Figure 1 (cartoon, rainbow, N blue to C red):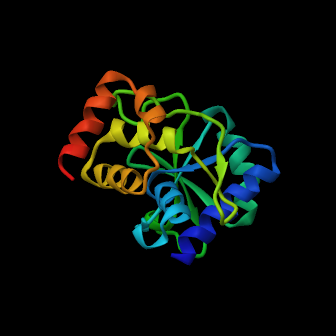
Figure 2: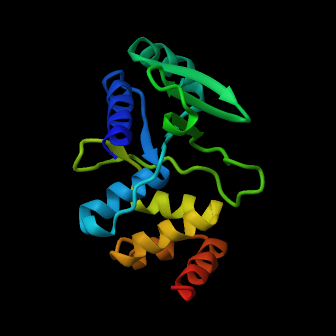
Figure 3: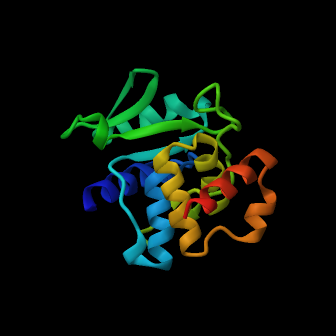
Length: 177
């Protein structure tokens, strides 16, 4: 757990210091949000996903590569691997704000301003995570939705802000709890 949080903290701190917008998304962001409300309910993930602006990728490389992050593009995924442990599972996986992660996804990656977790890491707000999780809608995303909902983080305001297809998916997840 500490290694994943350390990688996320190091990567986002470097970008924040350089004035480059970044936010942790995915399972780690879900973990950090749930951990702030109910630590025993938080489930850790194995990797770090961040949302960035695609047009900042070269600037990001220039900022993080001198600090031990190595850029790779493999199997359609952009990522930064940690030089001392160049395993894709321990790297930082990139998604791009305003773009669909996969063509069949319903919505693009949202780009709201990040919030700061108690560990100091910049993370996507809950509303953005809910949209992303309902858009990808894999089993682990449904579990993350259950985790966020189970500790009361999916508010009626968030639910009302969702598109109709995403509201239907939220209802489907809730029906299986």
